[in-house]
Image 1: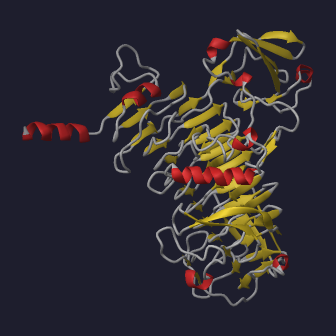
Image 2 (image 1 turned 45 degrees about the horizontal axis):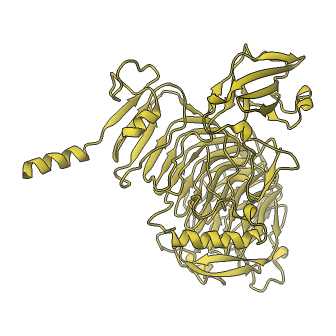
Image 3 (image 1 turned 90 degrees about the vertical axis):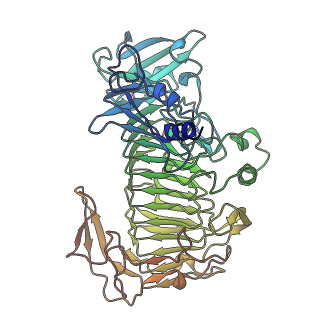
Length: 581
């Protein structure tokens, strides 16, 4: 009996690797000689500790993992084969276009192609969504990989809006009709694809923990608006799970959000839209209470790693998350071309948009042309935003909204016209290059939560009187270091060691040119003891593990001296510095 149990234990602990290939034929068992033809087929049998390796090609499917791993050491890994280009697309190719009128083509598509979900019959909607007075669908049309612009009137197809063209759709009981103007291109000679699936990689239930997704190109998802009071379905999303690693992927062309680290549906789904009698902030506080009762905690939720991804061409957010991103690391991602079409709007748009960024580290990301670069909305506590590059964002680079801190924003380069939109308190802004304005506002009508240290446990609620910030060793462009916008705050703002230069220019080759010298400024290393404690939450500025913050490295990872240089760069060689290759 002992030998039998040992053999069974060894069998359980041995990890399997399953192969997936579009070249598969005959019987499929996931072996190298008989690979599965779809990723979903491998997902159905993969167990904790197993790896699914996917080979070259375009896989048109939604991967819905039925289970996750048991621990960080025994996760389920989905990976593209090394040096092979593997795409997962939520689209299908559409052929057989007929010329409907000069410049306008028509496709007649059986509704059976869509199954239970037809994106051309699904309107984008949800809390804090602004349709700008016209309907928008989750569907999309692509010409050679470039998305067309949807219009709500048939006659507008004659005069295309978008660079690639314009489309309009109608749906009846049996067919979907798409009318498109491809700006002179013949769709029967080009590649035309349309959104069919609502995601590329997303579990249908919460609690699919410890999953790694690595090395894929994922695109073309008919994603719905991801409000913080709703289940947030992204092109790829974690669905209220724990311990995911999403790395080295190219994620593009989501109708709403690219990556979602969001909450579940049971704690509320667009509750403000369903009950407008109460303010949205009251609804969200109730969602938080339900989440806590349902087990929202470090043990059950978050602790994700999102790193080294390229995320582009999403019309809501590159990365979005409500409550589900707690204790996570978002690192070295390149996020751009977010909210480019601007056909709709809303309060959840940005390169990165997080609610409840408790003990989240946002480090080394490059975010540009994203409307708003980073939006930390509610409960940014223990959050550290460090070593990021923001530029060409038309709204602002970072918006901290109704947070009580402590949070640290250090060693960042802010180059848009508005660097910081500040509706919060209890922050530390340290060693940043602030190239634009700081816009300040109190928020006295909303009461938002603060939490116990390094925990989701609720500590209390308070409105935002503003102030209670620390500005140490920053480098301002063209003045602004006197921080007069914070005068007369109930809790004062502390300012030390800040300096100014005349101007900066970011070249297309990634070189930052600094004009004017900062001069000699008395500075010191910034530590948790120097920063003190926040006024509302009464908490110190420390790291996620409880150790005190010590900002002794610069943007490039170089060590700082005891009298460090203001701004994110400790040593400049002349007046230029390379930010990327």
